[in-house]
Image 1: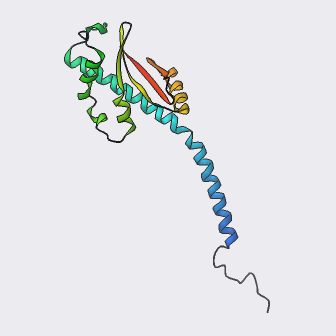
Image 2: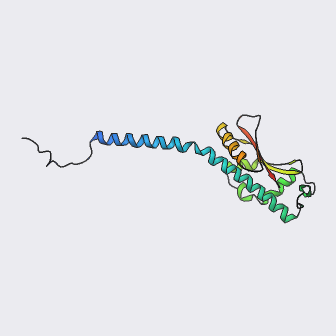
Length: 165
């Protein structure tokens, strides 16, 4: 009894067909992860620069509220030490600092203020950044105005400064 192939009902996919489709999907997913995985450092570097810009905005808001800064001279901070300035910014950065377990909390815990010539700079001092993160930050720092980044002596540590004008 010969089976007529044209009349035979197709009841599903064979095991070979299913395995072939799964292999193709896994190869495409792997290639997508490789392509997307490289952008995490760039995204994190953008977040870091944005956070530091938020700290700069908090510093300017503090100075406007307390009228401690003259128009172009940063000596108008009434001779405040960097630790006093940093402590004064807590009110403006409260939403950032209260995020528990977040990388932002760790960076804002390392927030520093320094005098650089006639300007004040605000920055994250000694935060964790691997080699890929350092490269991403350096690329973004060179493209942005007022930022300067310095790898610390310790392994995987980085310091990033932003000039407050």
